[in-house]
Each structure stands twice: as structure tokens, then as C-alpha cells.
Length: 164
Image (cartoon, rainbow, N blue to C red; front, side):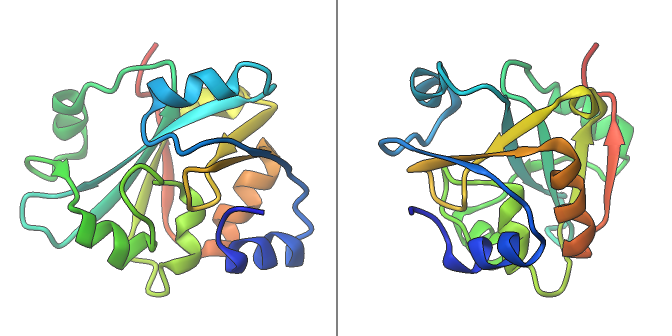
């Protein structure tokens, strides 16, 4: 299976079942849609930001079909200007490469540095999908298991209504 062995070990320890779907590298949502066509799940967009000082990092998760208004998010978070985190920061905090951003990268955030903002609309999802820290596969898990994984990670997270 493609993906980080450490992640699969943790999912096993947490008794989190998943459906595995292998596909060619898909570094963008547009390219991934082609391979998600027959996968029953809410597919997510995962965006990794840093604040203007570079001392705080955020993972924003929303439905892949939605657009994120970054300026609105900046106003609501009151952290100043947000910018996309660099490839170096992605590797340092989530252990992933660009195009493979996933909340499963939290298995690599030993200091629980990354804070998550999750669109509250995702709470309605039955199943949810993410890359297993590489963009050559997608894992589908139950939404309730996703929340269990987040709780296990120890990272802080909160739900925000990011779109109507």
C-alpha cells in the first residue's frame, strides 16, 4: 500500500477501518477528481497556512468542491495575514510533500504545533477521504473515526463555518 507505514500502524492501533484507493500522483484537487469518480466519500481540500510571523501553522480542511475565502478567514482568525506554508514547513510540521497535504500528517507533528480549522459542514459527512501522506492513494474512513484520529493526535482543532 502506498503511504506512510507509521500512519497505517496508528490506524490499526486505533481500530480505524479504511478503504484504500490507489491512483497515479494527484497533486491537485482538479487532477484527483478524475480518480475519485467512483469513490463514495466526501473528498477534502487540505490547505496548510502560516501566520505573518511564521510562528503559527494552520491546517484548514473543507469539502473539495468548495472555495476558501482566505481574506475572510484572516479576518475571522485575527492572526494577521495568512500565507501558504513553504515546502520546508510542510515537511517539518506534517512530514509531507507539496500536493500530499493531509490531516494524517499529524502523525509526524510530535509537538502538536499545527492547529486545525475544519469546516463545520464536514460534520454532516458519513465518510471522508484523505491522502495517506502521499498523493498516490486515497483513504476513506468514517467521519467519526476521523474525529477519533484527531483526538488521538493531541493537536488542537475547531470547527468553523467556512461557507454556506
